[in-house]
Every structure is written in C-alpha cells, then in structure tokens.
Length: 138
Ligand code: SF4
Ligand code: SF4
Image (tube, rainbow, N blue to C red; front, side, top):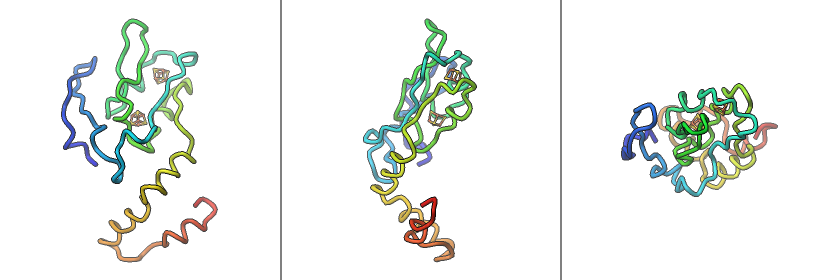
C-alpha cells in the first residue's frame, strides 16, 4: 500500500516524480473500479495551487493555459482521503459521499481485514465487527 511497487511514469509541472499508483489494488479491489477522486468546481476555484502543490500522490497537474489545476491522475488518489477538499480555501473540491465509501468498505471486507492485522499484534483487545456495526456511527 506504500506505492513503492508502482512504476514511475514521468514528472509533473514542478519536476517532481510521478508514480502510477492506480496499479495498486485497494484492499484487494482494482483501484480503477472505485470512483473515489476529487472533482474541481471551476466556478469556485481561485487557482491558488494548494491542491496541486500539497497532494503527495500527484493526482493534480497544473494547467498553465488556464492557471488552474486539473485532476490528471484520478486513480492515484487514496481511497477515503479528502485532504485537498479540506484544505481548499474556496470549497471547490468535491468527493463522493461517505455512504459510497462505506459500501466499498463493506464490499471489500476492509474492517475484517484490518481486525486480522491488528489481532496479530493485539489479540481481540477491541470491539468486534458486529459491535462496531451496532454503534450509532457504525
Ligand atoms: S486548492 Fe481549491 S482554490 Fe486552490 S487551486 Fe485547488 S481547487 Fe482551486
Ligand atoms: S484526497 Fe488526498 S490523495 Fe486524493 S487528491 Fe486529495 S490530497 Fe491527493
């Protein structure tokens, strides 16, 4: 999941290396099956560049003609991340809603898999998957 096994496919407008992270499955699911990536509302975007500069996964590229970012590598986005949307000073970045994400978490059995990993270092010292589902946030 670190991206170390992803091939380098070039450099971005700032000369930073770009990897193709879309080749790395997300909890066993083909990354390209999951429509989780930012969409820019250009009516709101001020072109500050914060999303382009700060996303370490090189999802954005810079469009010099329009002086705005573009979502050039959508499947490089980490499923569940929404940092760029949180940082954007203009609220110009949108993502699918949490319900969409939760459906993939359930389909890919992510919680069960995470439990299995945690159990290897701290056996059963936590809520069960069923108990999580029964909580108000579950
Ligand atoms: S952070 Fe927001 S306002 Fe700034 S360039 Fe990105 S989308 Fe546009
Ligand atoms: S959500 Fe995270 S990984 Fe995805 S584009 Fe924004 S900052 Fe990059």
